[in-house]
Length: 139
Image 1: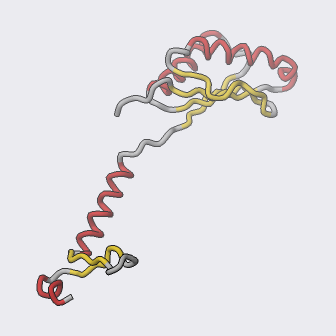
Image 2: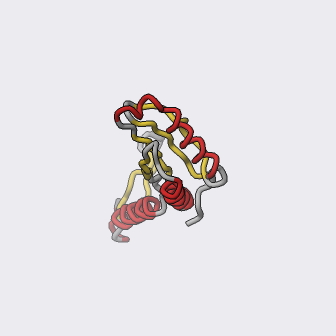
Image 3: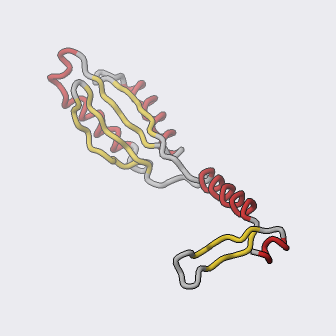
């Protein structure tokens, strides 16, 4: 303790359970600051997965379908997951095969950019499918 006081530093106990206990002379404030900075850098460089959603109807026109498909391609290229929802209203519920066909067609057309994470499934009045990018983009 006397040596640490002479140098103007702190005596930090590193391994209190060992025999004899291990201590280290260091500037504890500087050590804590460096740990905080290291944690901030790690948090800054982590990637978070974004989930984008596209909604369609079973009676969608060809041009509208192509526009939605281009949006999905852009989302997948940026590294986001895409949740594609087909919304049914009224009597459209009796023809869920039309929506499944749309989702299958979409998956087939974008297979080089994304893969199906969860297969199309009916959830109430909506049919949902989740697509994941094939490769994560380099930032």
